[in-house]
Image (cartoon, rainbow, N blue to C red; front, side, top):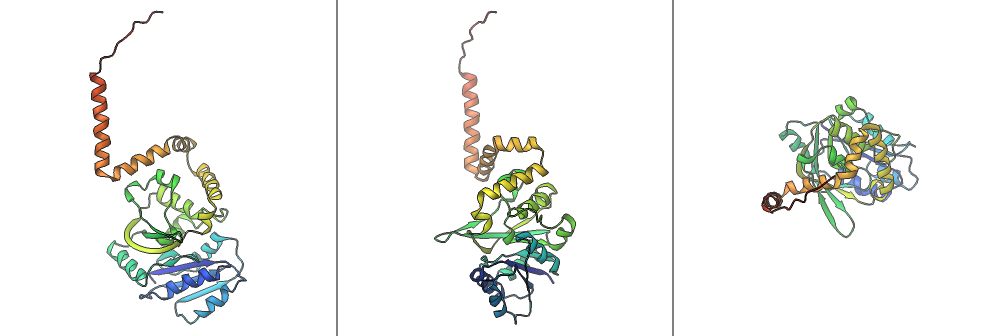
Length: 277
């Protein structure tokens, strides 16, 4: 089995229906579909049962200990070489996502992690989220992350580096990417394929303060405090310079102005006043 798609859900029947329809309606059915429900009481189980005849569907509904406990259950049950986490409320953007992704996996030599585009759904507008692999370094993870719902991760990486930290409520997927990609230097492959329509009303989006607090907790555990201090002082400037590097002409203009200012400074006469002690 090449791919396991994992959906976790708790009391989000309408979001679950949208998610399951997008998965079960795929033109390519070469995957297993695992739905991990946390003992919902809002009719979510009835939604799952509507699709029960789907051959590649497995599901369970039982109490769990939170988002990452449910995701880890999915990891333990999955038999696919690659895992994708598509939580309730999110959906695959069209019927050919699985077909396109499996082709990209083959064309890119079966990378450890393959990442596609996210369409961020804000209700009145949709924005496309892409990545610049050149700047996927520690500075990137200080302020951003890789979307887990558009990532296809080799199952073996969870055996090698561990599953999600269940002590965290909202940022354990970020911690996992920070460790595996940022520190251990496993290199993702980024492809220009639209994968998921991401509901921007999810837990990690609407609980920004909680997210930041957990991230600082993780950084203090994993990163040299001096490095954290450097980022807090100069992180904005580093990010700005990285953004400028993407734009050829902007970068050349900045370089020209910098050299010109140095040249003008050298030519400017400077009056030196004697000093006495």
